[in-house]
Length: 542
View 1 (cartoon, one colour):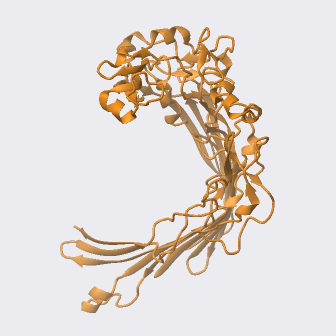
View 2: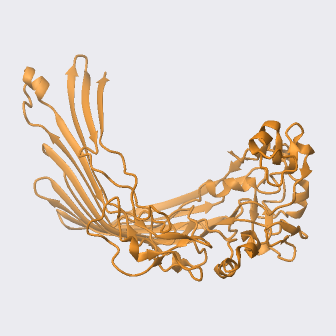
């Protein structure tokens, strides 16, 4: 079950501008209850969400030769979308939008004419509210007459998913093995994709009034109609995200208890989800509008393609990602000193890093393609555990107090995140311009992490030419250490004394620099990750 916004409790605003009952002071208006606007929802929408997922798989291992094994599998899933028991969700479908029926706006963004159907493009799930769910749903009858039913119960279609997998292992000799595999995997869209759909007409009936008093809120003047607020939508043709994983590597047993592995690991993400704005004005329209004198510029809503609506962000499945990596691994599994070390050289490229990504230009994939937010080109992780040999096995006082100590630690180093430079312009915050020249500095620091002089605000007449991920943020380096000893007690009990030091070297790990070229902080770093932290513990086990 998911809950919608709390508009049913009422919301009032107090402003002197346009308030027929104002005292001339907004605070005094609030004390007297003379509001400028008041709105109240008829209900707090609830979504009783459900989904059914059916699947099955088969797999088999074949020992083709003494030194060759093959494993193959196949998985099938019937991936039905999440839906609500009461069908109380709506969607905006661009294919259903009819501009001839839409609201007509004035250049200032107000509604000149509500049109034949101000909800054109909206559609409800299923075939209406089931009879046994009527008492769970409050509905606006006027909006319900304008918004048809008939969308899929979960607002996109059920999918048949086929996921084959294959792997094999080949022993070159008694100490060396060659392994490889490939598999296809799908990921069901998470609940946040659909939860907000209960917050759309006709399931959020509300009233709005102006210039009244809180003693009788609904006694104010009926508010003028306005464009529909932010709408979250789902592409009715949305696919299920797919990922193809593959790897090939060599594993080798080495002397003195060592084990090593060298692998190539990659994946291809397709039908990945993102959340672009599909009702943004065209860039050309924004340029023309920005060139007008300030008094003549139209409101943004007047320039949008789907008139009568403000922002419409749609969950779409046309993003992608490509990951390639060389992975090295070494460990020692026995002895007083045991350790592991792993290094990854990788590259992650795509046009969306997560389901919430909202690109500057939703319909130009090439413009948005570059290093993903989780791309870390280099990464090293090492661990060790050392059993201190002194007084080991000594049953005396020295052995009980000084023997049996164990030291362990972890070191982590990785290169920085790739960042994109933007700037505030008359047409909004968007990609900046790269003027050419060296970006990195030999003496970079928190006061100036990169060469800021090679970037500038993009002109109003075109998009910026700075690329995605052109700046690399600070790398991360940290040691964590632990010292511990266990003291045996009678009756099979013991006490463990432990001291931990996180970021033991107290290294300053900077956060990312500011990347908005029009801000005074551009290129500087003002925060850092946590400094050294110490932790002591005493644990009694019985």
